[in-house]
Image (cartoon, rainbow, N blue to C red; front, side, top):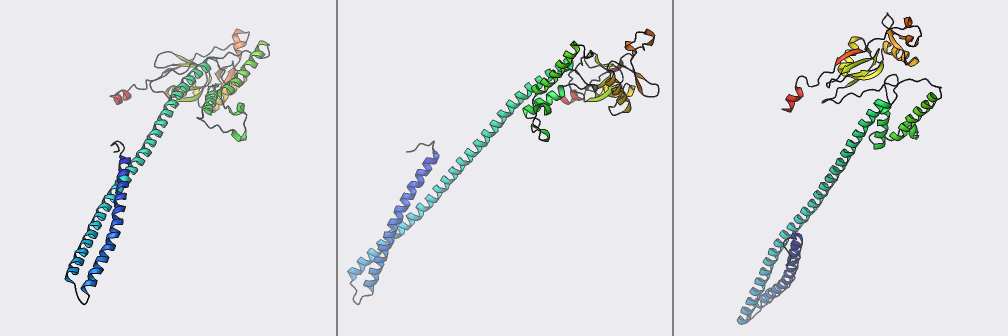
Length: 342
């Protein structure tokens, strides 16, 4: 006897047994039908003869009754087995359907589990990527040279790493396939930037290039909720204080500032939108003379003061003090997030 644990095999065996029994009954029923028809024919022949033998008639009647009773019994047995067979076949189909659905559902669950595992690995990689990105931004803020608008190489490096990671499209631009041009990985971009810096270092060492000091840019401190940064152009050096109270200094020229600080710089007339005429004047002056001081020209514009290197003290104009852009507001000063957390 098959074990209870394998329901499918048990039902299959039951169906096979019923099919065998039903087929046997049908064969016997076929014989019983023939015998009943023969008995009925024999009785009819005796009853229609000229002289009826009473004993023979009784014998024929008994044989006819026996044959018809046997036929009826086999017909009933066939109907009963057919019903049982239909029920067993239905249970077999239901069990096979249940097993098929169970297999399909298990496969869906397995695929879902593989997706979750892959997503977890992606999250781990994303955390590592974010840590590496923060380290890169910190290094670039201290060591990298920046253009007149305050842009450093960290944006290009992070974008190249994102292309390497598949976060940004990897397809070459305009059919080009030179990795250096489109920055397909951070090492390539960093190698190009470092190569340019080493070339300039050799020129400085040989006296073929001027020494221009690069002011390290303090990264904006981490806040509970990060402020949106806005790009503006400063007419002079400035500073502001984040929530930790440590002053952050910014040089004249292009820079990214937290939105409230940038708004205050615009209001004080120290900062200007990058597309404004004043910003274009400031950028032009610093492009020609990176060490020049920015002075107002008295008519709403700016001019460059190049007297810092003069040998005559009377010609030197006093440097403007860095502008105080105030304190960076507490993003949860009104307790909005604290109340939401409750």
